[in-house]
Image (cartoon, rainbow, N blue to C red):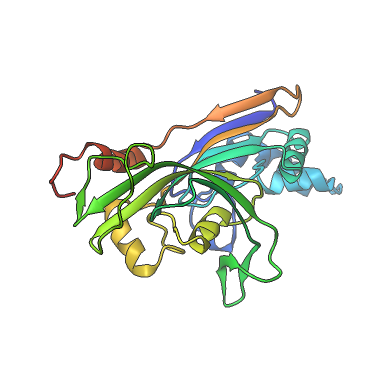
Length: 271
């Protein structure tokens, strides 16, 4: 509408501009052109009049209210004007926005529901990575198990494991277990979900930063992107205050990987 644009961001596209993204088009670049924010930017810079801080931030960010990692897909909100931008930013700051992510992680996550509440901060020895650090910012992620899955001796089991239909037996060294999770981040720290799940001992499938070098290398033979998807969001419309709820289904490449768990014939080897 006149106040808001919602996109379903594919994996592999950077959201915000930075010194390391000069050679690639970002969502901010696209939005700036699509919404004619570039015209406002030229006006602010060219008329000699100081802009309001809000208007300047709106222009500099291309209307983008929040962010997703480059390899994370899913729902992204973009404001079309400074007032909507401020309203939505305040909703995020006051934790009124409800977000749901879907992730496939290594191992069997227990218990089946829970909360990870540990501070997240930038690592001093690697400024591109984040971790659980003393003095980090508060970060809270709730989760729920959707499904347990396993691979035996490199072969995909056709049966999805859940605590309701069978007991999980002690795995052999040649059996790999995975869990499909629904995640509810209550804060929005950079890499929060990925860092929390690594800390919890269940890194996201195909995570090149936090999944471990050997494990992520094997994962990326099957899926050359992170298995993390922003699937649902609810917020108040910035003008009408009506609750808006949006959903994004899993992208094809994630569905294709899941189908290998669910539909691979028993005893066949994953290609």
